[in-house]
Length: 403
Image: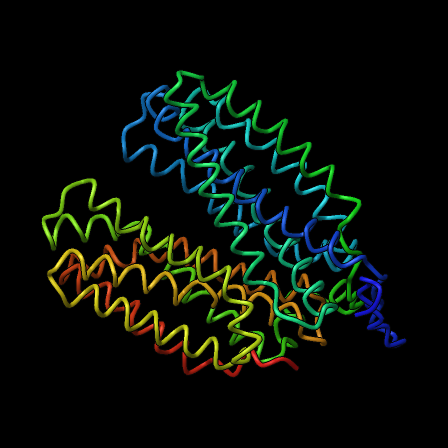
């Protein structure tokens, strides 16, 4: 890499592939990193106002839970389309406009007047979240390939950092008595400015595969390389595990350990802290150990940490176990997204859309699955399903080997 330039001359003048312009490395890296930060800020800003909006609409827990399904429905529906749009228009263009749409969609929930309108607004919010997710991960995978060095883990760390910042600021603003409409509108304006300011520095890097544009969905599915399907399975397992820990860790602390509400909340906080910290370190670890050994080791660490958390009755050891679990899971999704975007036989957007789409489905169905199993047995036993999934993931580690 000379003169700070990434020579993205992957241009193999084949009939199916059109590729990339050059990009100034530092500016491009920070532009992509800012998009991951922005995604975390938007999601966590909405989350910070959930209690206020729920109370203002007078919704029961059951009714509000159903409205939250709108986010998942919108995301799952939008992800395949986003993959096609990346293949058709390029990830830079989609990342630019999805940031605009995602920022504006943040305002919609605060304008809801009842359960139905909230469901509709969250469906829109989820659709923009899924579209933005595919576009920025495509950008990250393409830039990582052009740089020739691991960087996806740090990008995902920026998402975690954005989540912590947005949740903290949102809590302070809510505590100050600012209403959801003013808060979300003001935040949307700031986020919109951030997105537009960084748009010109996003790298224009896209492998365009004409087969992805013109073949039928059934034909595209049948022609997908097996390694991409394996990556989709890993994405499903990991999102399922993260969603289950997010929704059930606090309940586990209360039911199995008799912990206070504060300690119960600390369990997920420690898990998130471990994840954020090791996402910052993940690229250095991957550079040293390689993609396959990093993923396999991370999965085994996660399995060990969660096993510790589920087999001890000391709150301190359980907290440590959840922290280790977060550290282990932290690098797996970035590695899988990066691998999905590097497969030469499909456009990067298509690969990432399949991985992230299967992940969203896992995130959607994981928590209810744990609940059903716990109802028939115990929550501890149900959570051991996640240990099994991480062990299977370790066995599938060769799927992330650079090709």
